[in-house]
Length: 212
Image (cartoon, rainbow, N blue to C red; front, side, top):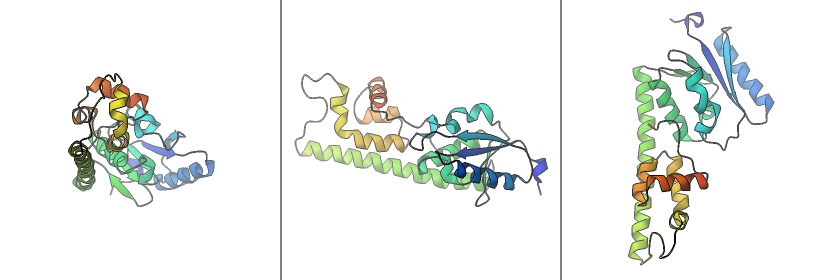
């Protein structure tokens, strides 16, 4: 069996808010798991409300953790705010040949069949949820048309906000679920450039980690 000393460089990821005691607890758990091997730390003190691409995990890990190295976290919830962010990151890490270890339940995600099957199951569930959200949105738009509601920009209106604001909650859910800007633009019959500007104004940022 592989010993800890034979393993590659270990990075410990600490996601904390203002609770320094929580950070110390995470650090101790990872150090115990590492069994004395040196751990290099990535500490993220950003708000938990920020998307994964806005935190150090998403924005700098590719410049720090190299293929073949290990990223250790205490629990899966440290990797993202929701199911989609976590599974998207795991999928990306496996593509980059980065080994992710969740120390509390001793689960490993790496480039092996078991991890690929597990990630595929998670990814399939995520895709089904994105499809359901899209289908519910299309159905809601169809009902509005049937009720005689005029969709799109009112006559004389020049702002894309006027067209998209009534659907902002659906757009928010779909961006959080990983639906691409191109797909959203087609769905709401607007250009990608216009939609990108709208998302920026409304602080609705699509996932920056490649979706599964």
